[in-house]
Image (cartoon, rainbow, N blue to C red; front, side):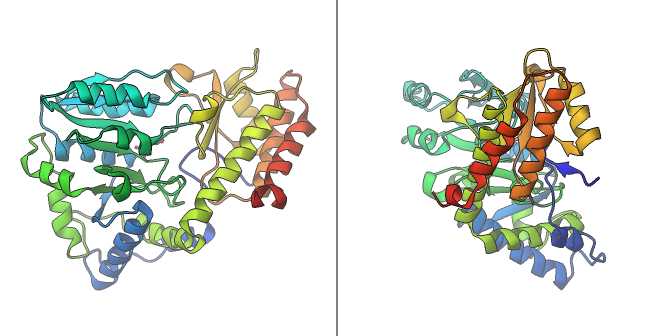
Length: 385
Ligand code: PMP
């Protein structure tokens, strides 16, 4: 039975991307690799919607978040973190680990950051002590999405830098780095762009590059200035994950051929089908309606259903792999991702499996209703709307 990978990253990877990953090894500083870097840099500028140099790090997304912080901040700097879930908490924790004084703008999991509260916090800081605001574009734990555009606008003329974790956002949801005035944006290869894990992509605004000149948080491997110098030569300072990048180049090719808007629409269509299917099965979607992600849906398990047993049944009887809950949501929810190389038929299969496993485990669900809701949401007429 072929596995259907529906976790919110790493995602299912297209065959041509896997083929590129399997290419013979090459000189990482030779002309053929330089050509790959030069292409990737251009592709990433288009994907990030920025004119700035996008750097590629040999790291998962978390290394990208660390790089975002250590390159623009100094120990003791006042930082506002606006976590909306587990990954936002992680971003704040990395800042603390490097000695930032982190103030949290609290938000209930499943909700969005209160734009007015952020605006008020920045306005009250008349001495401009707040050096950075940490945002999560798409919160993969709660299935939430923050309104980064509105939050960026709320900064007004306060000089705080906006650092954005868009690990599960870039590529799937609109993210206009330059137009919105975002200062550091981070994403990773194994999410919406459909690559394999191993690369983080990060871009700095000109203000962030200025901050990098005076920032004193310790950094070496993730020093963006070294990476920028190497990027100008079509290289990275240290050995790049060559195979990952060959795959990413192909994945980005596929992505740009589809087109950004079409890719956003695809993610929106798949996510709305997942939400419709879950609702028809009587499952409660965790995130508030106005805060829902287009890349991952977090749903509560029905009363009396053991989540590990449910996920095991999905995996073993149907080959369907979904994510579990993180931190305080562990054992309470499952997470269904809709990024990567998926087709409409995959959601039909997934919802048949979700419905049947729930019924087998004793939940009173209408399996056909779930499938029909998904089918209706993915029908050509619905997607043309
Ligand atoms: N932030 C978000 C929003 C994520 O979804 C993830 C990965 N699930 C991370 C950060 C961490 O990325 P990685 O696991 O690649 O280090």
